[in-house]
Length: 530
Image 1 (cartoon, one colour):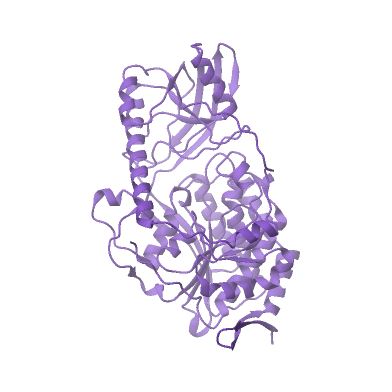
Image 2 (cartoon, helix red, strand yellow; image 1 turned 90 degrees about the vertical axis):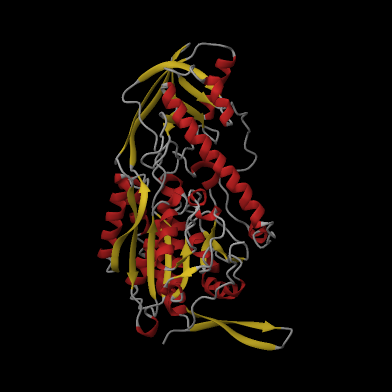
């Protein structure tokens, strides 16, 4: 028999005493022993980052990651291991090398890297640098006929601001207490309207600019990295979709090299650059993307009920996708390995999903949820269909699939490699005492906090949006938002191995308890889109 502990909730208003969430301390002890003393999380993490490397969706490296993780799941004895396709993601893309050199008035290498889904230069190209600022469609006309054979410097210089806080941050009692404060949201409809307007205008301008630069015969364009201190923060440009204009080669340059170029042009100096980008699209037509799925089957009458955990395996292309998000993938894989290693036989099926297309808008997880659990009706208006799911107008009542009622909970990791300090309850008040009980055996390793508030921008939102319990853990941010997020510094050396071990233990324990508790996880009331 395993030992169990229980929290007691005293309801002062009624005098009722209710026994609260049981915790399987024998299983927690086994999980901790496996996670802390026989961990394989860094072996998994290292292979993803230093053997496979960056994993842009639909790149050869992403396909390699899908295949390798399937192999590990099979090696560990998981069931139903497969890749799950989501349709029409777009074309694959990769780059091999990129260089920018200043040829006059002095010679200097300049540090820049290409944006994903933009073309290469087909060998070195040389041209005069010209400054271009296009903030609205009307700005295009003043450059017509002036950009042929030029290299374009896009945008303004940015004043350097010295940091006032340490690059790396761990939560303390004060910051954790701050997470307990809930901010009442404003009007969702007004916020969506503004975001739709901004998104539509950005997309229209990007398509027009891509077409214009290519028609003009410009050689390449260079934008400033959004972070200082020599960090290249870069995502996508052009278009991943076949048939859409991809423009010209685009690069992001460190601020400390971009700013002097702006100043030189303001002095009316003549600046010539040589640019060489070896980049290519891998398909002529749009291709599906792939999530990787595996399970520990449930036993008995609850076996068809589902507990899920996951992390996105895709990354951007300039680092090795370490903090974003090989860390999350390694932790979720390790949690499944731990459960198999300790002989876990859950009542509900525990399913792990390694998502793709997260960086392009949660595409892999949203598509999976729509096909397996629930979705709002597809809009018929072409303008609405062109918007991300989060920005669309209401289209009707939620359409539920059979597995909707069999689903219990989803746990996600995607905020770097920092230690778990608790979990965001996503305004699910009924889940809070459950999480408090499950966290208690991990207070000694720093996980103590259950926060009411929502957190977003990652794959648990695909579940939360349709009324299914989906949660993201509270993590120490380390230098995630100062050095590594979407940058070329997102590499192995910014990771904390002990933090990954702690996270894997907590995920394994949460998955076990969710899969063995008497009831499925409580759900908050679904707010229909307004």
